Amino acid sequence: MTQSQQLLYTVHDSIATITINRPKVRNALNLEVREGIRQRVAEFNKDPNARVLIVTGSEDLAFSAGADLKEMSETGLRYPPKDFIPEFITDKPVIAAVNGIAWGGGFLLAQQADLVIAAEHATFGITEALYGRGSPWAAPLPLLIPPKVAMEIIVTAKPITATRALEVGLVNSVVPLDQLSMRTLEMANLIVQNAPLTVAAGKKMLNAISSSLLKGLEQEIIDIWTPVYESKDAQEGPLAFLEKRKPEWKNC
Image (tube, rainbow, N blue to C red; front, side):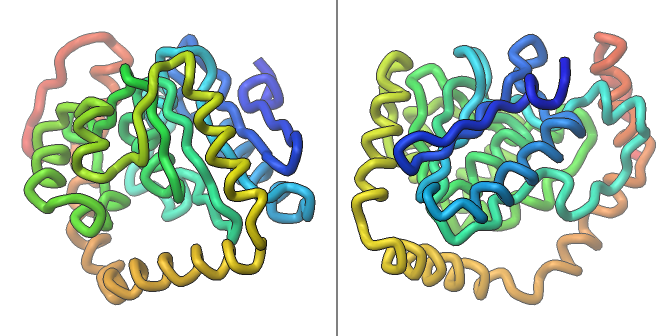
C-alpha cells in the first residue's frame, strides 16, 4: 500500500478532510501515515480556500489505535521524538470525527483537535500501560477533564465510552455512526461561514491560555518518562504484541 493510499486528502467547499486509511491494522500510525499527516497539514495551511480541517479514519472500527506497535518493535523505538505523533499546527479549526477506537496516539490526535464529534460506538483510551510505553503527551489531560478521571484513564489503560467522554468534556457531541459525517460537516460549515480572522484569533487565545498553564513543565515531564522508555519493559510490550502473547514485565 502506497503512502497516498494509506492517507487520503480532499478539499471541498472550503473543508479539507484527512482520512487515515489502514483499516486492517485499525488505522495505526506508521511512519508513512505520520509523515503524510504532516505534509497534508502543511498543504492545508498554505491553501487559502481551505478553512476547516476534518480528521477521521476509514471504515467503522477505528479512528486510530495509535502508534504501529509492529513498527515500534522492529525499530526498537525508545523515547520518541517530540513530534513522533503529528501535531495539528494550524491557526484554522480542526475537527476530529471519531468513527471508532481512539487509543494511544489516536487519542492524542483527537485530544489535540479543537472540536471532537464521536460515533456512539467510539472509545477513547490511553493504552500505553498495556505495552510498557509512556504517555508524556497526556500531560494536559487534567486541564481538560477532572484529574481523577484522567488518572483512571492513564493507570487502568481501560478505554472509556463515547458517552463517558461526552460527560467529562472530551468530546463535543456523540451521534449514531450513520450521522457522523453529516454532523461533522454541519459543524464545519458553521465555522466556514464565520469571519476567518475572528475564528483564528479565538483559537489562538484559547490555546495560549492552555499553553501558559503547562509552561516550564516540559523538562520535568521528559525526566519522568525517560526511565520508562529506556526500560526493558518498554521493548517487551511491543514485542509481546508482535508475538501475540502476554507481556512478561520485569519492572526494569
